[in-house]
Structures are given as structure tokens and as C-alpha cells.
Image (cartoon, rainbow, N blue to C red):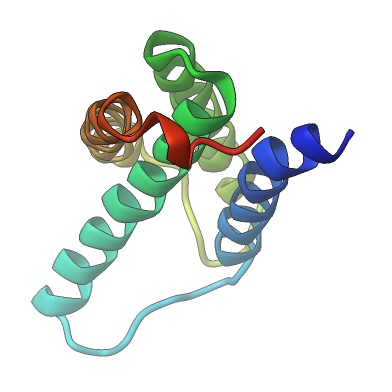
Length: 119
């Protein structure tokens, strides 16, 4: 039980954080172009972290990528119901780039540092 919580607790907590951010009606900073760029970097980064946590929990890069992309799609669907937000297939693409980068980096790190794995 403790091993499962150590492996999956961070995944669930991070997915909840993504959900919470997606529930905010507007994340605009008023910085125009920079606002757009920063939000897209944030998208890729938050999903890279999710993918890395999934690699850690699953110990399978392919499944981690698939599950993270499915969550990215569900996140965009969720945003379509939030006033002031909209769903965007482009964001799923940006999230997917972050997912692949995060999963590949994490899988290499876990491979090189097996003692760091939880559970």
C-alpha cells in the first residue's frame, strides 16, 4: 500500500493541480505576446512533469506517454466547459511535445538511477 502511494500519489496530485489550473476562467497576464508564449511553455512543462511522474509510477515509457496524452485531451475537453477558456487541439499538440520530452528524459534518468525509484 505504501509503495503504491509513493508511486501514484505524486501522479494524482499533479493531475489534480493541472485540473485546478484548467478550472481558472482566465490565466492572462496582460503581457500580450509574452502571455501567449508563457502559457504555451507552461502547458508543455506541466505535461512534461506529468509524463515524468507517470514513467516513475508505471516504469513503462510508452504507457506513460499514452496516458499523459489522454489526460491532455481530457484537459482540453474540461477547459471547453470553463467560462473564458476554450479547447484547442494545438494545446494538445504542445502538451504532447512536453509529454514526449518529459517521458524520454525521465526514462533515461530512472534507467541511470534505479535506486531513486519509489516503491
